[in-house]
Image (tube, rainbow, N blue to C red; front, side, top):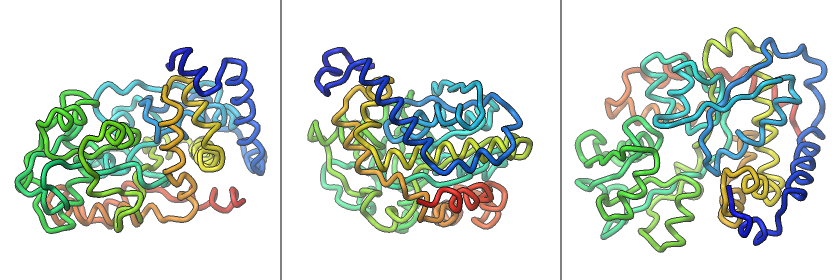
Length: 341
């Protein structure tokens, strides 16, 4: 959590935090109360994944909304190594916001994960050093990643395949031993490129390290596809459809408030210790289009990346089969109608 000095610097205090949190909750609950006509959730406890990353703000804002949806107990499973989808597959969480790329290979091998909705685009930026100017220039270079199968590895692989390179053979992958290592490998000059996710791009720019060769918030075709989605454990969705819809509604309302009131959300993140730097958190929140879930089709995102990975031999199932076994858009389609503003 930020120090007292940091809180003072942004004009923050515990009293103001409590007032802000109450205002946030009131803002959320001002949406049409369609949930009141529904039966209560079949289960009163729900488990999410804890990973204090700024772009995952809706996941933490959703806590109070989940209570309003009828969940009495909300738990956040700690992530030591691995990904949010791996925590779902292990049965330690029920639903989470995470990057969609991390879900593709687990779904391909039959892990019990279902993608329910998109959230936003744009949290990934590909940084490089030296003479590298384009994705094709990565041929023969060393790329730092969080881990094989993690979102950064899968996204870079998709990008390489898109420009005609073979991800398995034409770059050298350098895996960090823990979640935060990839950035350090790039900073130390041990890697030529690194896929940064918010707030890492802002941190690298502040330190004037590397250059951005792909910004997924601006550069097509990447800017047309979701980076973060809401995914759930398949058994949870099948056994508790009412709870699933209520939980997804909480996530989507939280995403809306990130788009509408980024300053208030940034203060919330500081006070809760998810991002101690108010200015940096605010920059991330303002950049990411958190209302994109209303407009874009998440199935297009899965098909786009799945086709790249399928052609590169990184997944066995074609996009049609992957979408059929790893998605469920029923709840999103209903909520798009209910939450019109």
